[in-house]
Image (tube, rainbow, N blue to C red; front, top):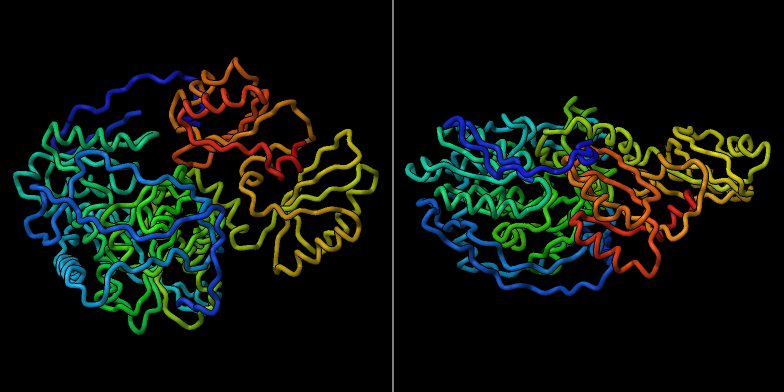
Length: 592
């Protein structure tokens, strides 16, 4: 509940003084079947063109044994085109965002770059700190899907994530005098742990910036790096980091016995998939390298679709380990040349895969760690893949314990073993009993109803599923008895908020309904209230803690139509991500 603490925000120093030479400092500041291919669902017209490949800038701080050069971020890059995650959506499991290749076989520059990555991955120094993670069969999932699902257990690394590979590889390549000046990184989680462990092993000083609400702190970190001559260790967009992550692909090739159909890789900034593709496509080019992204954090899919890097206007935070608004420059270049496409999955599907992993290995993955497994399951179902070997990277297990509540609520929905429905029935004696008779053999797992003064009532409930035909048969029984029934399973608004608010309807004049993402920090609520109150009356407020980097809040505000421009200006100036959902059909069904 950090976001809802009423304590006003207080200024904090950007950096804590170093108290131990080797202790990290923390910055606390605020197989693709063309016969089954379909056209992706596009909610906006998207131009698709190929951008010119720009070489990575070089720097005097680059590793002397890196033939590809190195990059340092000295100033913010040119702003990329902003797009919405919703502008590119397609069915779960569909292989979309297939890149247009920008090189031809025999291209000397491409061959030189590929060989440079290959030889550097082979000579990587990651095993000073990382283990060769096991490749394990998932027997229950394999039997259920009819394929052999192999799990590349990066969640078993010393920091429970693959991130230490890239961080250590870059830091171990720094010249001794540069390493002695220390390093700095910006990360909210796994990358920070990787840098901290690498710094401890190498005996160097590390400063770690922990972003709170805005990526601008990355540039503040860079400014600190320049002031103190520290080396900035980026989380993904650097050749040495990519090469370190590429050792995951090298291990898979060595460990996998027999033909391999595809490797599914979680995608955030793109360092892991770029490194794996750089190795595997050079050694076994027939193996598909498939990225997996959350449907609301699909920066790589959109970038590949447009043929250039784009920036998401908003990014979903559930799988916070991959919640980036813009992919890396070098990672995008490699992905455009080497990967086979991107699968998108829902939050529900990620939760289902976390449960699958627990039932397989009694291990709990973080959402980003289960992302590739969710993509592999969806892809195999969509294309009917049978008998093939597929690998999913279980990339991390740094789970926020608070998030387990959401996982347990949504896992069965993601497995299509539970459906959320609403039925309109008359407010007369005996209607509830008749409703239960129509539900029949279906198991009711949740039921919410409150009498109101109208002739009809809306009940919100969940039922356990066995087959889609059973659900359809129940709906038909309802409809034949003049009980209109709606399937709300896909509505995040219902699952996150409305299921907790239903209890009688009320019409609030001039109510504007918005979903805000509050930063998880003291004073966030007061900042919100200072922006809107007492100018406008707040008619609804629902906070649903999900253990995310931002709090998901549903807010109702009474605003006259003539004041909407003023309201939007205030909301934009507030700086919190938000979306207006006043016209949402599910809200009107359940609440009005």
